[in-house]
Length: 280
Image 1 (cartoon, rainbow, N blue to C red):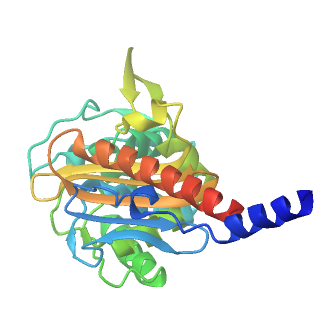
Image 2: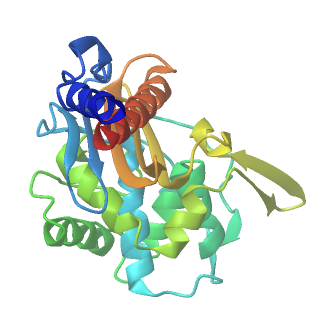
Image 3: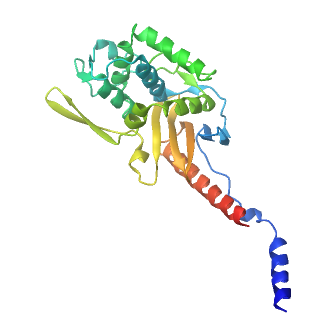
């Protein structure tokens, strides 16, 4: 009798129907105009939306600026000076780094990455071996070497709408940037203070998620232009897996962060669903 009951139970388990549609992970609601979410280790695309559309990338540009500056191997403790050449004559944006400010190359790079300081990024490329034009050429060579075939740069900051790329290409950029320990450290610095003359100036990271303990972010960069919308790229870890997120042309101040949070919850739910299915 006992053996008959065991056999009946085993038959019932083996015959159990697959999960109903309502038990599956729902689709993620990404509101950015273009996006790509992929596994950083395998390149597997988890989500794509207009992923091959070429768009202005705004300050995401600074990741490439940082890579070519680091590739040049110049002394990080060398003092650089903000000059009139760093004024934004294109959009007339302002900066907390006054003309004449002197900071180390290291500090300039950190401010460019974490707080998107435009004058710092411009000064870095002006001081590149051979000057700004040589630096821009290096950025475009680097893009081609990384397989970023739909990407073009014209300057260091992203203030020009002619700096353009696709979510697919930017995913390659983020994966490459994650191989630089300096970019990992500087782009995720939550806050940083520099001394300018006799004054201390505190900067905060332009991505609020670096201050959120629910996130484990290795590389990040934000961007904004009128024609680019609000952009966000990250190399992060979700459910123990390395992931690259690229979110482009988000409207409103909160959409790109909201998309990132929705994407993370979606991936976590997918991981839980997969674990349940594996145990069946």
